Amino acid sequence: MIKKRELLKKLACAGLTACMLFTMIGCGSGSSDSAPADTTAQKEEAPAEKTDEAPAEEAASEAAPAEETSKEPITFDIAVNKHTHSMCEDFNEQLAFQMAEEATGVHINWIMVPAGSTEKVNAMLTADLPDAFLGLISESQIASSMDSFLDISGMLEQYCPHVLADYATIDGGLDLVTWSDGSVRALMTGVETSYQDESPANLFINKVWLDQLGLEMPTTMDELHDVLIAFRDNDMNGNGDTTDEIPLKTSEANWAAKIINLANSWGIAGYDSGVSSHYFMVKNGVATPTLDTPAFREYLEYMHMLVEEGLMDVESFTETNDQFFAKLKSGVCGVALCFSPYAMMPEEVASQYEPIVKLDVDGYDYVKTGHKNQLIANKSGFAITSACENPERLLEWWDYLSSDRKIKFTMRYGEEGGFWYEGDDGKIYQKTPEGLAEDFTVDNYKYTNGQMGNGTLILKDEVEIITKEDSYSIWFKTNTTEQVWDMMQDEYPPTRLVDSAKLEERTFMETDLFAYIQNFTATSILNGVDDASWDGFLAQLKTLQYYDWIQWYQDYIDGKF
Image (cartoon, rainbow, N blue to C red; front, side):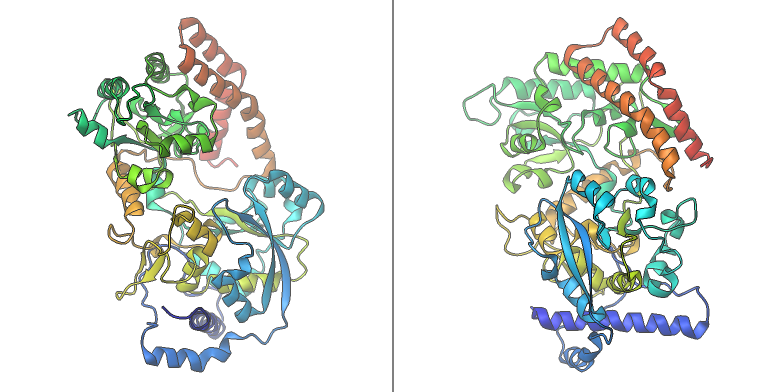
């Protein structure tokens, strides 16, 4: 493996060369319509320099002085989201930021904020602004505190040419991060799209248990009911206790395990795994209610039947995410709703599960929750604040990190050869890192050595290739998505920034409405639903502005704001 310092020199030189070429082309043409540059994702095809040949090493050595900048060193404070899986104490230990500092002279003082520290972020917004935020700020926070964030729209052509070139390849382009007043207050981070993530919530069944009972994979909700009964009535884990199996496991604490996703069998689907995205569906350009339908009531009645017969874990509504994980890892779950077994369970447990592709219900067309070709990049990922006194240098630093494909992957995952590598065909491939252990998983590796979703934008065509041999767990999830992809809905709300007044209008309606819907759903599943409670539910939907909320989305779809 190449020594870290040597790799840093090679990648830094490549990045600077890209920056220099881009600048010369722009100056020579006298036009702002620059040629597309490299980006940051998971699938790229441009050939890259080889690092195992002597001529390449000599060239890198000769070019090494070019990595140093003639500009004065400067330090910026950046508040950054530190993921729970990260074991890194100082992000300046990450290779990409060492490269960027040598190339641009920009040093970062990282203010590491643990995930979920909303109060700390709010305090920064009101009294102690850093120079920038990375992965911490939402679109709504920018909308409500617009003056706290710098309008960088007039600086991008000069200081972020590679970023602009990337945006030019995306449907919507720079408009995706442009507010109604024409300002740009943040730049995107993460990947443009991620195929494996397009189906976020999936049912997985313990195939070992199924085979022990001589049962076939269920294809309908009625067949699933029969399988769950068999899991309940037999000592499937063989520990002598016939009461500790959990036939069906969901969890309201986990983003990809919410029970509403099971409404797919009744034709109710969301554009993501979140609960509220299932409250309406876009059909032929019309925001169509789903909660006032016979389909939703029948879904509630079926789920209540499972609870009444002891086929579903009732703690799913009250448990924590850690408790959910513990149950999955213990090997007592027959059917689990989650992102992927390999993201939630030890490999020896996860390997027992296979996806349930589809569960039909008579009279309904199955629709899978998900979003085809969804833009998943964080549109508020990197935001420079009004406290920054030299935003031009900070933008140059960000553009350097966006200037070369290998630099982008280094920022996302860490050093080449760990979680990713470039093949002989010039394409980027994903692999399983060495040195993983029970207390240092693949997620620990990625978040410790790289920035993952906080990295510079990786375009759809750059996304790395995932093979079964190199990364089975990721391949498994990608293969699951492939099996259900055609069953996802094809229409979704648009992707567009909304000003604070319109966001507040929607949020005002959502607060009480969502709380009521979620409470009614849980109560109906646990205790049952009858005509009286159903009629009361329909009346409350009107009172709590459910139809006004849907009209908000209709106006959004129609481009009225």
